[in-house]
Length: 349
Length: 228
Image 1 (tube, helix red, strand yellow):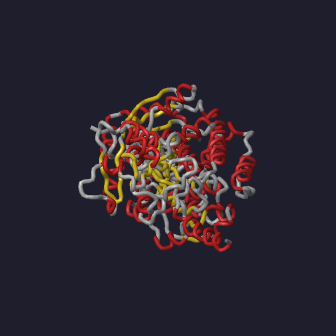
Image 2 (cartoon, each protein chain N blue to C red):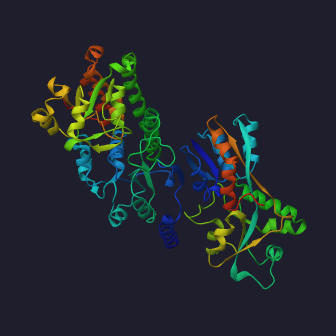
């Protein structure tokens, strides 16, 4: 009799993987329907924005594989926020992945960027692994899978898109409450900025330029311009440049920005600007208004909750210090980091 | 938006949702069991049922804002090809008592209810079938169907039964599977499955409108729904 039950148990163990786990179909941010298991505990993430969101939703333990250049994309200091990432298997990047490595990790879902090549999505799908594309934008049909999309209403596209993206990721990884907390914290920060800057007239907005390495910048259609707009500035590049582009020095001189922002991940750019003769004619350089941004003020092409929630506040305070005298950025940054990264904020104000 | 939808819509759902501009999260199950989950408080904006009865119950109980019919389906017979004899038609297959008949679970799954309706339409012969037919899927305690397989395919190829009475929308897919033969049931005997959705939250009206649209009808027709 005992042997009979042993045989039954063995039979059941062999059969179990054949039977379907309960599943659901979700719409990803490129509009694809993807079938995923009800419970997701093994994730591969090939997009740094989603990686940062997973970390903030306290789901690092569900990650079984991460894009190989995550440190380059998120900055060297990111490992301090999520030291576990150093132990994860690394594979692929935004536009490539090795199918053999991927299969070996047995992921239940793979997150990719919305502009991941169709062949990449097809090759992962062919392995029977669900692929979810994240854009953090609410796009018009036909623009969803583009890196530099046409956007009619940037405010709506990024505001709605970030909410939809965070909610979707939260649903997939079974952490809806964490997703909601992230959205609420973002809204709270944005309200402080909008309440105090609503009276700044369009012509009084400060002309700002985002300096990336090798004369690259973000024009219209990217979150960067929106960040500046929210903070009471105007992106000088937005009128003539679309998306992420290289511009000429002559062009920058013609724009003559009043302030220049440099992202945390490119500190050397500040020195280059301040020490290079050709930049000296520019208003922002003459008046020593070339500012390195803190790491939470991620002026990326894609919005991040901490950029909208506290990064825009940092920028607004930098531009209009008198209106934000009572705002203690270090305290707010620390509160955010403690809550969503479970560690103290260590950057400078 | 959260959707609960009848299992029989699972295969066509991605093609349908490709034309709907909002993100949705959809879970599938037998409509009777889905209705119970909604009654028990599971969050749901729209419930797409293979029968009008379950959405109507929600409406009557004040749990839905509207019931909107959006497509139809009918039944067909799938039989293990090597059980077929020369000259067999649908009636001979169903009345040959050496063949094991499987259906889905009545009450829990409308597919099972429609099979019961078929037996009723067949009169006395149908009563004998009702006794012989075994409900092997779609119930609360049924063994789940393996991912990516159809109920008829799984039951017959695993030798749990010789024929399965199920939805005709699976006809095209089942016809492709080696070892299976699909046989139609004449319209006079074949009950019409009327699919309807329950609009549970105001946001879901947009999806209900879409399901009624010509675009949705076209996709459903191509997938074997809607009849003539």
